[in-house]
Figure: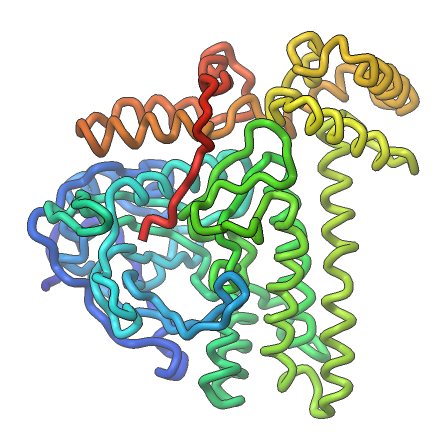
Length: 489
C-alpha cells in the first residue's frame, strides 16, 4: 500500500489529531486492499468544500478503497463502547478506518473515514466489509439530510470493490468514504469511563472541548459546560428529525455524536403517514426507537454521557451527581422549546401564544387518525391548499383550519411572510422509501446509477417547491407489505 503521486495532487491536507490521544482509544490499522475498486458515486459539492480536486478524484478509486494512502494519512480504527438496544457492549470500528482529518482551505477539520475497509481489532468476528446497497443508502440519506439543513455526516464517495461479500446471500462489496466533524460518540466516553484511566478520560474530554467547543476551555467547569452544550445540540438535532419525519432506527449510544451530527444511516427511513409509533427497522421489534420515542431515547443516551463525566464534574461524588442530574433535567425542556419553535414555523407562526401547542397537537392527532401524510399535509398547508390533504372535508379539520387562520391573522406578519416561513420549513420532498429502494435496486442489480442521480437532484433543494419535484412527492402504491429496513452490516 503506497502513497500515489495522483493522491498527492488531489489537494489532501491531512492531519490526525485523534492519533495523539492515548493509544487506548484506537488501534493503528491500515485498510485491507480490495481486488478491483471502481468509483460508483462522487460527491462533487463535498469534495470542493473539502478543498479537493474533483477531476483528480474521479480517478481516485484506489485511494477511496484504501489500496493507496494519501500523504499525511495515519490510518486507525477507533475504540468505543455503547448501549445497543439498552445492553452495554464493548464495540469499536469493526469495519471502518479513519485515514485522518482533512484541513480545508477555510481551516475547518473533517474526519475522512473509509467504511467497509476490512477487519480491525474490533471486528468481533465480522468480515470488516460492507455491501453496495447499504453504502448507497447512506450516501442518499445523508446528502438529503444535509440539504434539509440537518447536521449530519456527509458522504464523499462510494466505490465498488470487485469482491462479493456473504450475508444472507452474496452481495457486491463497496466502501463508503464518510466525512464528519468527528467520530467521537457518547460511546467513546463510555469506553473511556469503563476501560480507561481517569486521566485518559480527561484527555478525551479536553480533546473534545478543544476540537468542538473551544469557547468552553476557560469556563470555571469546562466538563460541565461540555455536557450542557452536547445536551443543547442533541435537543436541537432530534427536534429537527421530528420536523421532517426522520426515523433514525438505531439510536444506540455509539450512534450519538458529541458534535451533534446525525451518524449511522443503517435502518433509517422517513415516515409517510403520521404515526408516532412508526418503526421501520427489522430488528426493533419492541419499538424502542420508534418515531415518537426518539426524544426520550436521546435523553436516556445523554444520561449515559453524564455518567461517564462524573469523575470530572466535581471532586465530591454527591456534588458531581447533583450537577449531572441538573444538566440532564434540562433536556426535555430544551427539546420541547426547539420542537415547539419548529412546529410554529411549519404553521407560519412568528410569535408565541399559549394555545399554540394545543393547535399543533390537534392537527397531529387528526393526521394520525386519518393516516394523513406528514410531509404532504404541511406542504399543502404551505400553499393554502387544504383540499390536497387527506383531512379535507373532515368536520374536525375544518374547525381546526378556521382556528389556524384566525391565529395567523393575530400576528403582525403578513400572509405572504407566513407563506415564506412555511416554505423554508416544510420540504416539498423527502427521500421517500420507495424511491430510495427504486434507486438502490437499479444501481445494485443493473449497474444503473441514473435513477439515483435523478433522485439526488430532486432532493438537492427540498424547499424549492419546484414543479420538477412533484413526481418525487407522490406516495408509494398501496401494499399489504409493511416497509422494513435493515442494518446493512
